[in-house]
Image: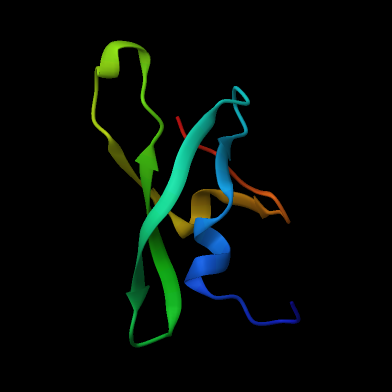
Length: 78
C-alpha cells in the first residue's frame, strides 16, 4: 500500500479499544485540520450494543489512536 492511506483503507478496519479489547465499530467520518492537513478526529459508528441502548456514534481524537494495524485500529477510549 506504500506510504499513502485513503479513507476507504481506514473504513475497512475494526476499531478496537486497547483498555478492554472490545470492538467499538468502524470509521464513518474524519475531521481534518485544513491548516496543517492532519486528521483531528475520527467518527466511529458503534456496533450494536445489547438491546441497542446508547449512542450509535462516538468521536475519537487523533491523539487517542495507539496503532494503525493492517486489520484493526487500536484506540485508547475510556
